[in-house]
Amino acid sequence: MDFQQVFGKPPETQASAPGRVNLLGEHTDYNDGFVLPTAIPQHTTVQLGLSSDRQHQFYSQNLDERVSILDGNHTPSGFSSYIFGCIQVLEQAGYTIQPLAVYVQSSVPMGSGLSSSAALEVATLRAIRQLLNLPLDDVEIAQLAQQAEIHYAGVQCGIMDQMASSLADTEHILFLDTRTMERRVLPLPTGTEVLVIDSGVPRTLASSGYNQRRAECEEAAHLLGVKALRDITDASAVEELPEPLRRRARHVVTEDNRVLEVLQGVTPERFGELMNASHASLRDDYEVSVPALDTLVDILQKTAGVFGARLTGAGFGGASVALVAEGEAKAIANQVLEQYNHAGYTGQILVPASNVEF
Ligand code: GLA
Image (cartoon, rainbow, N blue to C red; front, side, top):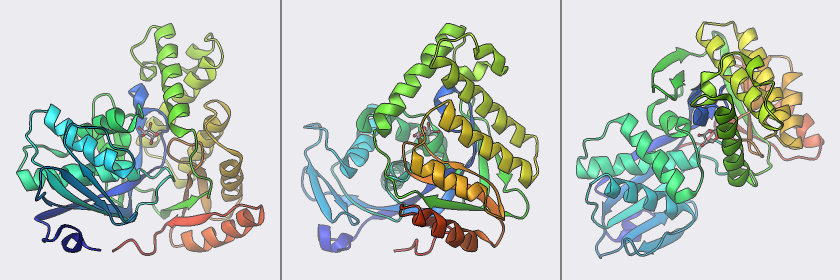
């Protein structure tokens, strides 16, 4: 069903936003640290019009699900909570939002750690900005999207996903300092491309584990007497902390240092080594990997043409990201998936993407 079939009239405007894959800098953003995401070709499109009654009307094409919301009455769940959250944060920012008809369609995989929720939030806010001519820039859009995620999806997330969805493109890496919002657009290392493979293991316990890690980092920063772990640059400074805070803080400090090394300019080989070290740190110190991801990343790291590989996103399941020799991603993926699936899993190539249009 298209917008016209669902709502009985054509849309007034539409906007899109991509998912993202993070190459390096994991679990650093809520520690005021540094990240290196890039956009993926898969995106979410939101079509918008004014609702013909007094309720917001949301429709998800992927789920074939329609939700009506009497504004302010209750907090919805599922896909509609993100859209509702965006409307709420705009109202809290002082804008008056009339009842809307919202139609959503997405090719961003859900539950793989590629920020389908940020894509939905940013696309929704962009579409509303267009419809109502709101004076919001792309950084403000990302900040509002983050507030929607925190308050209406219940994840105490950092700003990376929403900034990546709002500002990154698929051709470059976006370096972001999440404290100052300073950013730089970097090329991918010469002769490389990005390969994303889903582990087939959906992210479970992700929000509770995530919020717990965040609380541990805040406690570690407090014990170290700094505002955030970003303020620690020497990894040996964390050694006196009690466990598990010591290992959590060590991951964040070493991960920030890995991102800053990339910023100085590194070869593809070195970039790959830093990704491998990031995975080991996420697995052993931060403890957000799962056996399936470790198996997948291990196979990737041993495959010719792969510079480096790691889990990407929050962890607890989801996808891996690898930096591979340009032009070889699909052949490498087939080789890796044969071994991985032979181990009893059901992996899937997500980037390079086939079929992202609708
Ligand atoms: C999720 C969050 C981000 C970031 C990553 C981990 O994607 O939404 O803010 O913390 O996890 O790097």
